[in-house]
Length: 88
Image: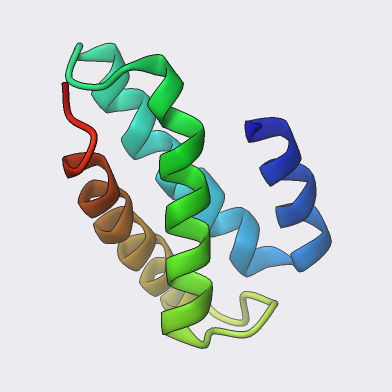
C-alpha cells in the first residue's frame, strides 16, 4: 500500500512527496518505539496525504523554504493526529 502512495505522490509533485515523507517519519518513529503497529503505517500516510492536500491548498510545487517547512509541519501534525487513533 505504501508503494502505491509513493507512486501517487511522485505524480502529484513536490508538496505530496513532502507530505508523504513527513508522515512516514512520524509513523515509523512511533512504530520503532513500539507505540504503533507496522500495519498502521500505510493508513496513516494515506490519511495524512488526503487531509493535508484537502485542507491546506498548497498547490503542487514547493516554491520556498518557508513553504517546505509549512507543508512539513502541517503534515507532521496531521500524522500525529492520525496515529493517535491507532496507538496500540
